[in-house]
Amino acid sequence: MTTDHIVNHLAIWEFLVKPGCESRFEQIYGPAGDWVHLFRRAGGHLGTKLYRDASMARRYITVDHWESLYAYETFRHNFAAEYKLLDESCESLTEKETPLGTFHPVGPVS
Image (cartoon, rainbow, N blue to C red):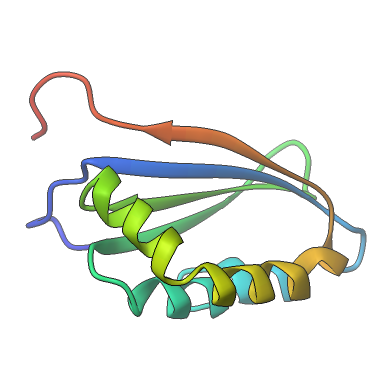
């Protein structure tokens, strides 16, 4: 993500990864992984960050940065089939997947 973009929408997910699947999960969900490749096919994706919990090694969150809620919703609509296929192929890596929500900035964005 470059600093010349204003982030207007974030989609945040939490994952509990199965033991021994951490490396593969990081490859698929990381900033150069399969999910980002799918997101880049849509307009408005600004980047994805993957974070690993410092105290619980199998817990991760992803933060997907989009130009707008409209861009995110358009992506979800236009790529629904591809999204579903990729999501299903990743189910074996996790014990739990939780959408934490979608977020917008409060006040001026710097």
